Image 1: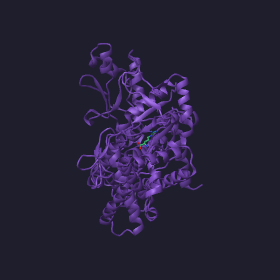
Image 2: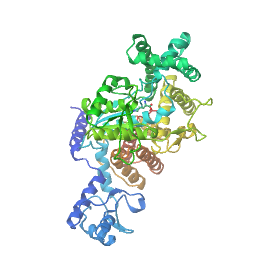
Image 3: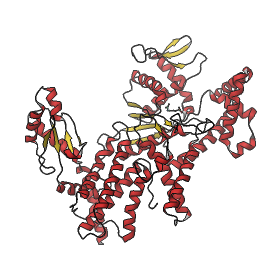
Image 4: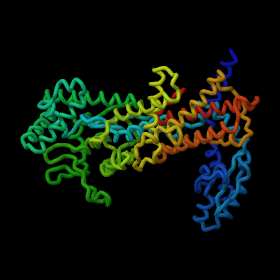
Length: 590
Ligand code: ARG
């Protein structure tokens, strides 16, 4: 066996063993803290152990003594001193210090950092453990409506949902990505009327979706002023719902044209679905849903409609939910109730995440409450987010006041990124430039979204998101490319080392950050906050730049040289993996 293959085998088996033993500093210290609390005769689960917010106070801290002090009205500082006596953390930390009102601070020893960094270097997953409580999660995200182009408002759900799916999957959950497309509803009366009466066939050939939308809009206008048109639209809808062949064919064609537009956007965004069960998929289940809810007494007949009242729920008491209208028609909500059944009973989901904007908050409160009353115990979450605003701080629109089509926006991103590539690296060939520009452009749009706190609105700014400095995707991509070019320059691969040697504080700082990767990734799912990961990656890139300024790599002596090269390699892998978990690709050059 060649030396290379032998070392490969070694690192593979090391990786398998680590799957069971790899722990982060945080999880190790948590265990040690619990043990100390128990030995001190205190409740073993008290307070939190977190990364320190200020490096002057060390690397980790716990508020355990403060929490316990409150619980049993004792002096928290005295409690902290008592806990410290029982802490045995010598293998990892300098002697822990009590600070302030009773915090306990932990500072890692360089030797412990060297060891942990080596473990991570040898692990494909950079130390990220798989969850011990794997769930089967259906993620409902994107979910655009047919007969309308996807617009900028769809960015957040699509990009956020995709990132959460990637992270959940990486952590070992089973994920089903479901596109709950709006392909059914009252608007189809108008769409079909427009198709039959106002369609320009040539225009349809050129740009099908645009022409369908144009005819639909014109129908809408006519219907507002002309009761006859309104009635004709209603008739078309009734025929569609009754299964009329001609109308079903038209509907099918409209759906197909819309899907083409969606697919184009998904390709640009590199977003994939496991399922695309649109609203129409649930049509024939709706009567059954209504019957069942009537039978179980969850719904009742009220003024000819079937309604769910939430009388004992103060928040929803005056917000009844109509699941069958007086005219016999079903609502958006009826479909969502059928969707819950399907996902839990047939897809075997124990968790459903709805990544849908804040305006649908009430709708999902009602749907979740119905599910609870039906006895479902699955964990259903509505993951809401704020809006994308234009520079004028209003909902982002085109100059003529229309929604900005997502496809055009993404193409614009690639065009702008292309200019950066031309400037930075004019000698690349065409194909490379296009590829890199797409990675930078799409990455910038995604990152700008994911790096925001999800609940707040944000202002869409080309300048900011494409800047090569600051908390942007291009900045992180640039850091990665710099590292790759170090290796390209020397023609070397990442060295196989069996020990890190750290001398400079900048090396230690960078290595510590790399050890935190495994602590950060799972945290994202706690509050569905990818911005925790973006912030981390930004700081990681900053630490790398500081290291690279302070520590010569190629010109240093062995063994420092290979230790530093390995640190470079590990940083590149963390940046690449981190952005990958957010659905952002990494260019090799830029
Ligand atoms: N199509 C809807 C819209 O564009 C979003 C659907 C969200 N998912 C759901 N299960 N209701 O507003």
